[in-house]
Image (cartoon, rainbow, N blue to C red; front, side, top):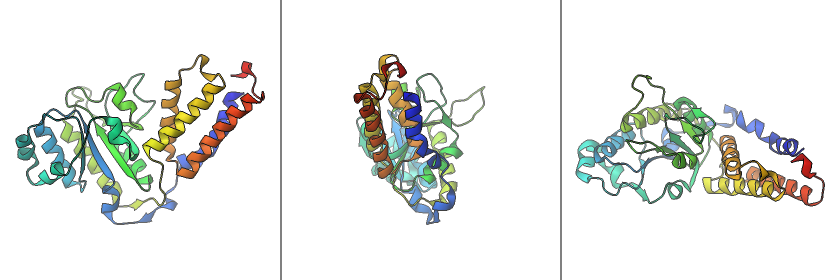
Length: 273
């Protein structure tokens, strides 16, 4: 019975998952690209960071974010960045990935590795670019991991979606700047078309919604067998793809508050959970 209630509660999201281009209007190319942040997590090589700056600038993207990376050699950054050093000089710096992504309305972690704790789905670069174009306003972040180890499970869990770049199985690993170039080039092509007209919720607001949903389910005894953290990740992945606006996010919270209230009033039997 509870499953049916949850399905009914979320059924109104279906139109959002197939959001059509009819709601988009032509706009100038920089508008979408100015929203894009390239986030490098624990970078080790100043040369790689400099090459990333060049890749970004050639595609009209200027917002670089570093998480960690305090020991980078600025001379190596300058050598590889050449005429794109201004990207590095204007960078944002954060201690944690959670803090770096707090203001973003959509975040995509770039990784070739799959696994039990590494998202239920992974987008192609073209699919990620389409998703970012469909998100009307607010910052979007492309997250790249350490050059040697990539994104950890925990770091990828901080992102709304995973993105993979198809490559040869004989040698699948791409250089950091090459991966950035491919993603930013794909975004550059998509940015020529349109930009959305609505403002989706931020990552922090989405976390508030998913926490509320999980708390409501916990209050009715749903997690006797199912893991609460796994369910929160599942809800967040689904809702991030739906790109909720504030009104829709509020409605989701109201629906799950109602579900919890039904249990408190005895309208959901324990045996149905």
